[in-house]
Image 1 (cartoon, helix red, strand yellow):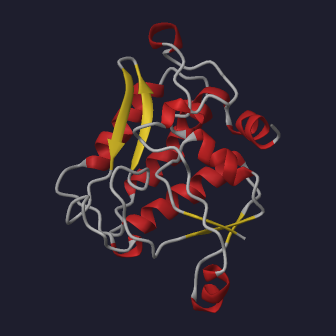
Image 2 (cartoon, helix red, strand yellow):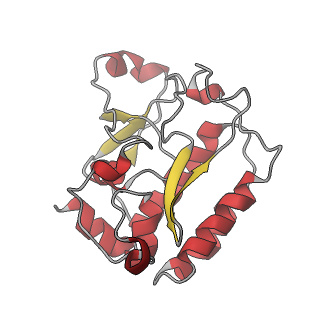
Length: 204
């Protein structure tokens, strides 16, 4: 079993790692860490990379366990994120195909961050037709978890673009801003389609 952290529509490198695992457990009891992808993703726009951050109650400096983090709906961040995604990818080859289910995903208003991240993970798994099995962490496997080595992605919002070992594909704004590696998996999904993403990432 592969133990790691949730990412908000994680980077391409992170999803490539997941695609090569038969079973995945997400650590929901680890402390929230600022400047991570737990509540942030990076998409491409005509002006360059854009950070989309989920606001949380209590601010980003807290050390609360992830499964206790509550999202802050004092601003309409879900509407803003969906609008940014739509603006950035409406001209991509496959966005129209994924748009209805993505809108449905963002229409729900979960209280806890971990519930939204879980929903995003399940949506992505379905679009990629990935065959990894998500193992929920519960009391019966805690002893096993303690003996496991947890995977930490080396790529953070501050250094994600340094990953240059991934396959290239045509991005929407590549002619204007150049190719930006290792952004959110949504970029590759909308530009290539789930079947091709699965093939490109799992078998290299």
